[in-house]
Every structure is written in C-alpha cells, then in structure tokens.
Length: 110
Image (cartoon, rainbow, N blue to C red; front, side):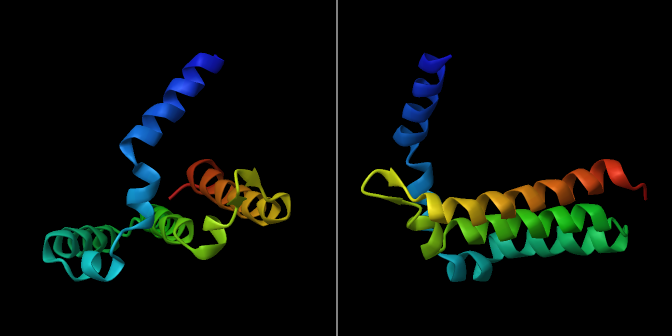
C-alpha cells in the first residue's frame, strides 16, 4: 500500500498539477470565451431545469478551487513541515463542505 501511495505522489509531482492550479490566470480564464460561454450556458441550463443541487455543487467546487490558491493554503507547509495550527480550520471547513454535499445527495429529495 505504501509503494502505491508513493508512486501516486510521484505521478502528481511529475505532472506539476499543484503548480498548474496555483498559477491559473483567473482573469484570463473568466474572460476567455472558450471557457466562459460553455460555463454560462451550463449554469443557465441548470437554472432552467431548476437543478439547485447541481448548482450548489458547482459553486462549492469553484469555491474549493479558489480557496486552494489562496496565500493561507500556500503556507500550510513551511520548510517541509505541516503547520498544525493552520490545519484545523481547513479540516473543519472540509468537514462542513462534505456534510453539506452528503446532505444534498442523501438528506433530501427534489
């Protein structure tokens, strides 16, 4: 199991995924019509279909993407050491988001 985890981490490092996420040009992305038109059309379609659950999940995923690029998240690991004092708010926020998603999928029906 440990070897599989290490190979997964090595693969993530080789793809530079974390670096790509942190270096996204948000202004360029949300002014690019090749992204903006399909995004707006999909949101408009979900509003038309009144699929509020899916809209909330899109907002949550967009918020998680935005939060992952903040300075707070960049300082969770300093000099290769995890900052325990900063992990608790992230863990609590993640638990709240996970609870909301579980509630949306299993707690109520549309």
